[in-house]
Length: 325
Image (cartoon, rainbow, N blue to C red):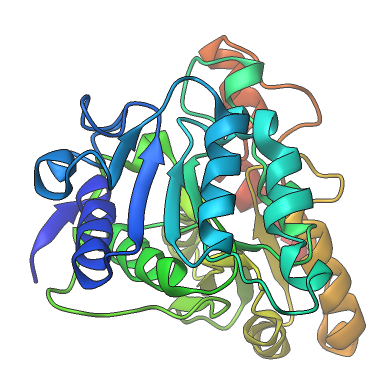
């Protein structure tokens, strides 16, 4: 199977959906003339023209509102944020507009729109450009939240998101755009809300999503040297959450460690932990362990970033803790 970059997989998804459906268009800062801030939209202006690949001013509130209005009228916009940190400028439009319109209209008005762009830490960008918002948006009824971890999932999930009749928050990572992975050729879709058991195991369930799946794989490889068998699960989407896959895994392994790049309070890990204690409590042989960011704004210095983010060392310590090693 061919290998392509994460950004190329996203581009393929966008190209295929725009060729399939003339109502799909891309709008955001630098998506057209500059070929995208991260080169996801490279070459798309030439193929689809300025009416379907639209450069905007630095005005997230404005172009988000335009996109939502277009979606309410049956068009399928893809709105690119240069970073989801900038989506805060438009959060009223997303939450009070896109997310609530179907309910407020009694089901008469759908808002088929995708908001996509990078989230979380990407190096020395300091506090205002490094925050995770998955749990913020997942807390909003009416939104779906997708966080792919590899090029194949990125393509399949984005195509599904574009075809969805509800607003979708599609979160990527600047640190993953150059990652290569095997991507099937031809048409394929990945359903939202279905986690992927990427490695089967018996001793402990280790779950994550997005770029921290890399840490999950590294952790599982490292503890395997000591004979510990991890069942590794990629959540893929955090709204809807695939609770059933996690519960069934915990019933098999009896232990759970959650690896997540976000602050601990009201995190996705918090929600999963609650669900496990409610539906798999009698199967647990140890308390659930969460590995989150330390509860401080992300700094600029690389040494401090490394100290605050989840890492393999902390993940291994958590696995040993639930195994009472």
